[in-house]
Length: 238
Length: 356
Image (cartoon, rainbow over the protein chains, first blue to last red):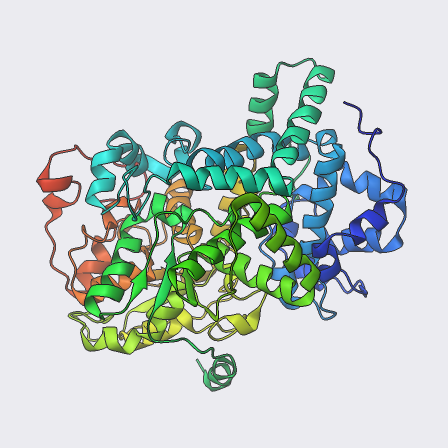
C-alpha cells in the first residue's frame, strides 16, 4: 500500500477539520511555556513549541516531515501544557490530531516510534473487542512486564485465587470487578467500531505496517516484536 | 510552610457533588492492579455510608486508554462513551461517577467538545443509534470516585479507628498526594481545588489527621504517558519521570503517598522497585520504599479494615512500616493467603528493596 495514494491536497486544511486541532490550536506566541512544563521534553529530544510553530507555518512539506518523524510520538498526552499555555492552546491536542493524520495516511510507518502503532493497536483494540476492557489479565503478561515485580509474577501465577481474595468477580456473570462483559455488549462495541471508523483504522494500520514490513525484509511477527521492543539511542536528551 | 494563599486558591475551585444516587462505572486499570480498591469504594459507599450506587454488568471500558494510545478515532471513543451514558439513562440515573481519572478526563473532554461543537454531538447520537439503537441523556453531575470520598471525608473520619498520626510521637504523618494529570490539568474547574492546588486528596489527608507534603515536583506526571508505558521500548520515559518525583520528595521524608489516578499508584510503587533493583537506591527508611496507597485503601486503613482485605499484599513496596506507625494490627502470616486461608505460596523477595 502506497501512502501517496490517499494524500490530501493540503495537510494543514486536513488538520483543521479535526476537533482536537480546533480546540487546541489558536495563535501561538512561541513563548515555550509548554516545553518548559513538558515531561517528554525533558526525556526525549522533543520541543512542543517547535511542533506548534511548524504547524503554524502552514507549510505542507514541513508538516509532512513532521507526520513521518519520531517527534510527534514522544508526547505522553499528560496535557500539562494545556494548563500552562498563556494563549489557551493545547499542544497535546495538536499532537493527537497530528498522530491521527499520520495514522490515516500511513506516514507512521516511516519512523521507529510511529511503527509502535501496530502493537499498540493490537493490544488496545484486541482488549476492547475481545473483553470490553483496555487492559485485561489475559493479555497483560508478566513476561512483557517484568517491572511489575515478583509480587505480580506471584499474582499472575495464582490469578483466580488471588483475584477472588481481592473481591473480584473474574470472568463471572453479573456486575463486579473484572466480570465477563456480556456478549451482546461486546457485539455493541464491535458495531460502534464498524460505524465510527474504528474497524477501518485497524485495517489501515495493519495494511501500512504489512507494506513496511515487506520493505524492511521482515515477517509481520518480527516487525511487530521489533516495534514493541527496539529502542535506538537517537531519541534521548542525555 | 505558609499555606494561606494556597488555601484561597483551593476555595476558588469547588464543585457541587450530590450526596447520593450515583451511577458507577469501573476502571480498566484499577480492576487489574488494585481490584480491592474498587471493592472498598462500593463497601464504603453502600455499606458504611448507606448510599445508593448502581452498577450494570453491561458497561464497558470508556476507551480512554486506547484513545490516548492513538489507536481509535475520536468518533469511536465518543460513541463508546455515548453508550455508557445511554446505560445510565436507561437505569434512571443522572449522577455519573467513573472510578478512573483517564475516564474522568475523557468524559470532561467529550462533554466540553460537544458543548463547543453541537454538530459533533448530533453525529455521535446518530452513530450510537446506528450501532446500538440506543439514545442517551448527558449526566447532570459528573464526579470522580475520589470526589465522593472527598465529599464524605468527614463522615469517614467520624467512623475512623485509626488516624494518620504516628502512635509513638503523636505527630501527624507526612503524606505526599499525587493527583493524576487528567483530573484537572485539562479542565481545572472540574476538579476540587483546580489544577494548581487540587484539594481532593489533601482534604482527605487533613481530615484523617495527616499533614500534606508540598514539594517541588508535586504536580509532575507519574510517567504513565500511555504509549510510553504500554510499549516496552518506551518504558525508560515512564521510570525517569517517577525517578524525578522521588528525588524531589526524598528530602521531605514522606511516610506515604496517596494517589488519585488508576496508573499512578502502580507506577509510583513498581518503579521504586525497579530503581532499587537498578541502582540500589531506596526512598524510605532502612531499605524500605515509600508506601503508595489509593484513596480507598487509605480510607479502609483509617476505618479499621484488615489490610489484606484491602489488597495491600499486591503492592511491591511493603506497607507494614506505615501500618506499624499508626498502630494497625495485622497478621503477617495471612498476607499472601488465598480465599478461605488457602496456601497459594508467596512472592519471591526482591534483591534490593526491603519487603516483609
